Image 1: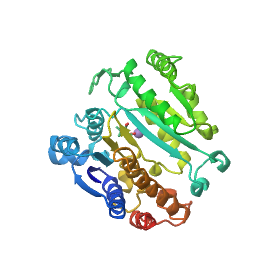
Image 2: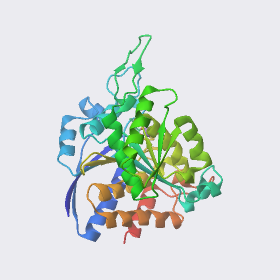
Image 3: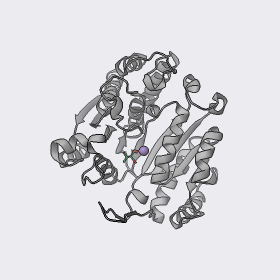
Image 4: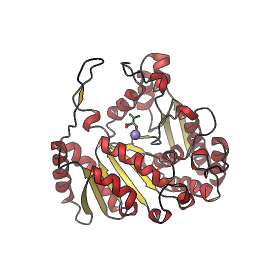
Length: 354
Ligand code: IPM
Ligand code: MN
């Protein structure tokens, strides 16, 4: 098949990891006889430096003319002045909103090869395989706000409407049907009105999915259960901010934040694919970045935007094989143990695609 992919490398380790994911996609294309065109564009801090805005109109146009978007990471100390009116993160929020990518899928799996690497008891990691469905275009990230540079108050508002919760709940229930038929909805309904609406809406949507078990967990308790009984979760549906926080916490189960991919989807096939980690400016340019999260995001791109399930599985299997063979980037190397560079690791994934 023919497909056009917009690549937004962004800042910090973004360019290092996206180039590896592009290499993987190119390899898949030649192996399976597809024709992928990659169009690179500016976004984030680098776009601010070159154009004054984090998502230039030209980049948005490149994205609009694509079947899917592959993104590295945005942000860094250079652009984090709290009084700045232009921030790298604005471009990311804007692009999610522009394409109405309301459902952010973040799968978290514990790899047996990395069980010794987490700070948790290895037996807790048996069968850990969960999927976060994070609401991505609503809630406190986009609610009414008043930002006062040097004033004495500022606010952001957690605002949800019934249709916003309904559509993300449908995504979660449908995902559960092709997994282990269980959805955990995270909220703070004991304190916040927005989350009472969230819970009552999820309960209503659940009426269409009698084959799926639903439970509700308060967000504070959820942080604890993720560490004490992680294998009990199947699909976790959460608001924009709770999904953001909980998925970073859950990355501990996978051995490193660098391992986790994500797909941001709307109602069509257009999607934005990015690792859940940030731009890691402290290790940028040193060959220490773990490209796994971005490579697995590319696998999700094949699956969700291009409908290439077999190809997606080949990429995921190549990553598992590479890890099982002992390849480790710095973040997943045993304490004091040796590790290989981003390039060497990616080369092993590429050869596992043979
Ligand atoms: C993420 C990131 C973003 C978010 C930031 C960079 C705006 O943390 O994708 O999880 O908060 O959504
Ligand atoms: Mn985050």
